[in-house]
View 1: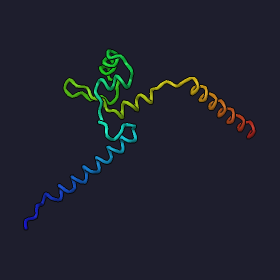
View 2 (view 1 turned 120 degrees about the horizontal axis):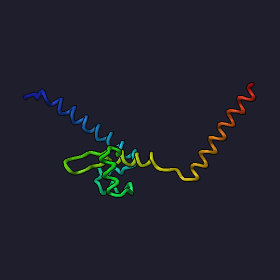
View 3 (view 1 turned 90 degrees about the vertical axis):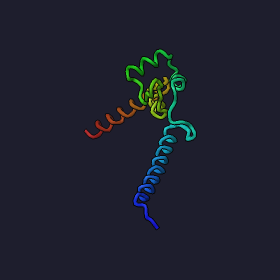
View 4 (view 1 turned 45 degrees about the vertical axis):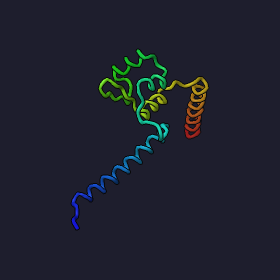
Length: 120
């Protein structure tokens, strides 16, 4: 019986591939991209998700303002998790959200001042 010295490498690489696949799946699920969907979207996907005009999107991409863009030849690919997170991070707050945040900040500051005055 011949023992292949590279067999151990094959087993370890297979284990690493399984672990990386699991990590990628966990990342996709956590980012809101369904597991059965592709990790990348094309230009049309990006336009639909952002609601930007094509010319605006192309200008922003050219200026390097869009995260998660990969260019393969002439084709643009957008990492869905990165784009969706960027959209979420840059969404404008509604008036109700702004009012709630302002009231919370006001209450927090007055609570701190009241505690400081009592301590003095």
